[in-house]
Image (tube, rainbow, N blue to C red):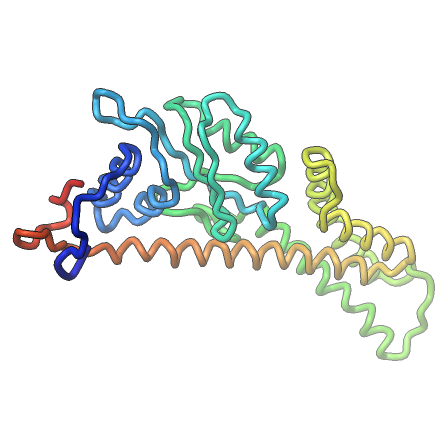
Length: 280
């Protein structure tokens, strides 16, 4: 207990896994926030062999494609069957997955590939945290390029309403040059909807919300309402970017909690000691 004398009346008994995890957390440097959070998100790091080192390793992944409980079940199903994986723990709010596995050099990359084949946009969480929403290592992400393209095309397609407001006649859609920009916007973002819907259908055997939006886009285009179809696609891409930014921002703020680790603790029957010197 920090900031005062301990109130416990007797020594607490902990399992070796819990003692190992607590020791690693307390022994972590105050500035190493990413590692501290990665440790606290898992309740077990494996049994201790005679050498004193954990027999298992923990890999933390950022999975931005998780948006509801169905994706959580998909992640657990896809990763749980891999050889060497002992447990899979999911944090849906932060879009992060902690996988406890045997020490295998190629397994972390295989975890990422397995989730990305299901279009879940997974990356290994590094010490510096995850990448940005629209930029990663100074380069635009695929979602950033998609959002920029859809925004430009959708903005130009507003010329359709300007022509109508000026009293122009509503002729066939192919005579309106702005209709082609709306059609291009829908064509640019629709493959992402199709891929998300197909992944859910193949891996889970169900139709998700992406399939419903894809049906809405197809219906709008079938009725020659090209601007409405483009609007559905644009706001879908925009919501993906906003959701990804919110998750990234939340993860960064949660990472700041690692700096709240106290510098000293009070030990019953003795003087205050630096937290790095305390071993449980």
